[in-house]
Structures are given as C-alpha cells and as structure tokens.
Length: 76
Image (cartoon, rainbow, N blue to C red; front, top):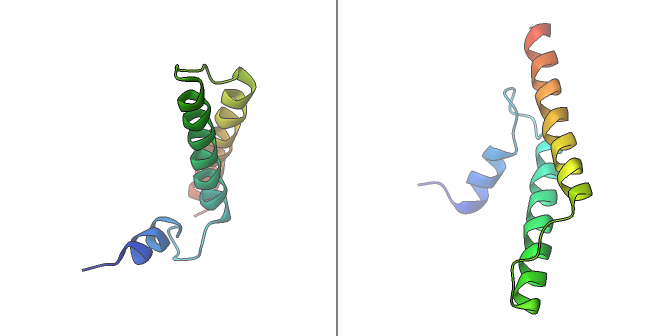
C-alpha cells in the first residue's frame, strides 16, 4: 500500500521517473487559485467570479504542458 507522499511523488514524476517541475508549478497554481477563490467566496458568503486574467494564465499553463508533452513525444 502506497502512502500519500509516495502517491504525490509518483504524480510529480514524468515518464522517465524524474521529477517534473512543470507539474509541481501547475499543482501549486491550482491549489492557490482554488484556495484563494474559496476563501474569498466564503468570506463574502457568495460565489465570486474568478478574474479572467487568472483563467487566461491557467490556460497558458495547460497549453504549455500540452506543447511540452507533444515536443517530448516527437523527439523519441
């Protein structure tokens, strides 16, 4: 049975077993975005819309990861 830390490290590893800094950045960004949005929504007791610039930055992060995966798979 894997521990939670082992599962997290496995998630952060790429296909070769090396740690992926891009995955770490995206994971931290997601937690911060959702955490801040949740905190503000709870503090104001209403669902606050997420600023579109934050959604654009999230889209850029996802797009960057897709381009990275595509370039790595074509180099093999």
